[in-house]
Length: 121
Image 1 (cartoon, rainbow, N blue to C red):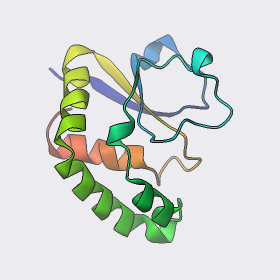
Image 2: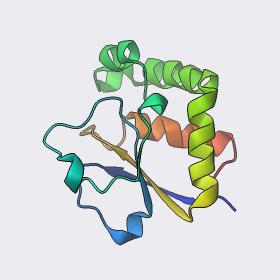
Image 3: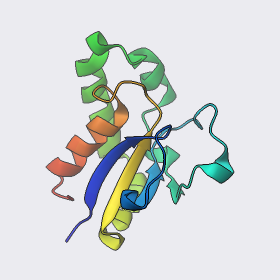
Image 4: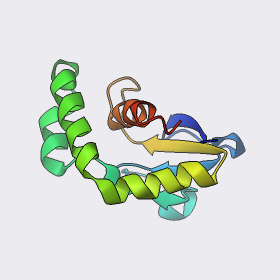
């Protein structure tokens, strides 16, 4: 059985109910000290490319293009997929951490859809 998946902003307080915490952003979040982040894995390779991230710029009108382009990047990112799949297999609960302010339009939402389509959840 695969892990239960939780999406959470890195700026929200860590909780024991988070389970295995994976930061899925390419850049380290501003204002967060590494020693206080309580991150089990920083999987920056699963994050959208810099070009895609800057083009999206967290603008809802760019969402559909971002979602499709990021999904394609994920499909070709076999190594990062493997690392994430292993974490999902080894832990009962996995928390994907992201820095974006918008809880609906961010890379974690696309990654969750990707994992659901792969039937890894």
